Image (cartoon, rainbow, N blue to C red; front, side):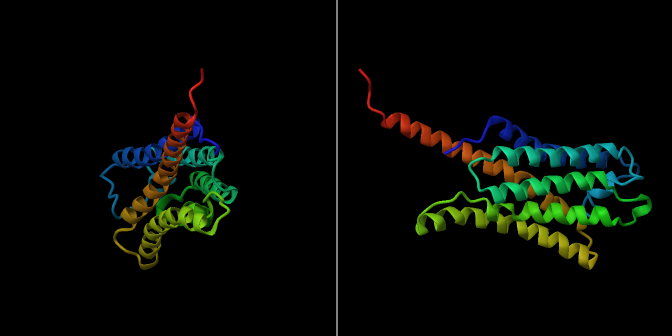
Length: 210
């Protein structure tokens, strides 16, 4: 089985750091305070936000990290990797199309965010490595299905808050975006740990040489 390279681990580690660091530092730079429970991440990168480059850079870096990680997840199915990369491209588009001044809406920004959130929630459902046996397929797919559900639930909460004009839109978005940023790291770490264990078993199984 192919091993996930170290550079993919580095990009997976960097993704949540860029996102969480961006919204934390960006919020601290807003005059008069910034309520991260009620206000969205995108507001920190809006045209009229103070030091909007902080969150813009965080989003752009996050998108690039997802693309790099997708390229390095060679043991996984191509469809899942492509969907993760699409989420990265969508995140880059979110950074490229900021919200306008005055708290207005932007169709390109909304579409980019929808693509990013959707792809980053669903990519594990298509990522399970192929196996030949029915029992093997069920056992391998179960953790990927659980991860997909774990990502889809906070995204659904965020969508519900948006649709109802809830008072926790910012919190819901941060939970959803944070989970999606952490998921590739969990996958990379799991694959590298499993690969290391298989190598150790293979070494122990080799007969000693004279």
